[in-house]
Length: 253
Picture 1 (tube, rainbow, N blue to C red):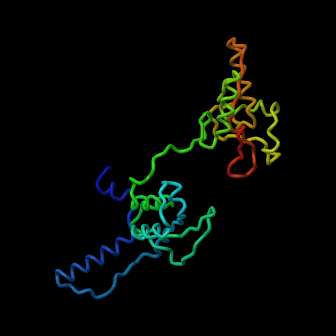
Picture 2 (spheres, rainbow, N blue to C red; picture 1 turned 120 degrees about the vertical axis):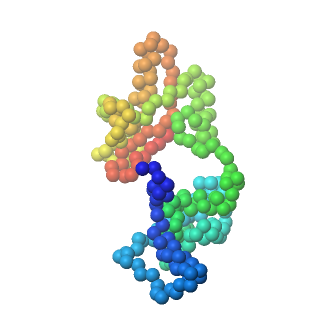
């Protein structure tokens, strides 16, 4: 049922607010109604929930928002938003950047990630100071700031009468024995290929170890339609298996 209570509590409840509300209630009774507080509150809760900790790396502020904020200002803004340094004062090293652990106050139900702290710092610094720029993309056919050589290669090949082909990154298993993977890319010999668990096409379950299958398919498609003068090239990623690793290696070809 969509009610005021459901909208209020579906986002979470501050368990620490119960004691604060009770203390305020006792304070008002003593101040206005002449009551007397005789003892402290008795909490029958067996075990309080563990404090939520968020590890924060100052370098992530600029990486995510383009804002250049001094580390001291990061801590100041975080404390102003209600966060405090962890009691143990420990720090850890992550991705080459020194990081600090913050304790999330119980009333900040919406905070649980490092990105949430970055958002708080950006809000205090000013959203209007965030620069606007298109993010880098890795889609085939797009020119990147660091891809000058690829852009020059495309121009040279296009000037020679070649057309760029853009094929799917997954192929059929019939190519397993037809195309040899790139030697310097293969790490796990027993699992040379990357197999998809939920392929878009039922028959295309392999991540391509080479660009040749896609180019041959494009060539066959053109020949079937009667076009004999076909000159194609493709620039894209190829993949190789690595056993139980989290992500397979890839390489531009």
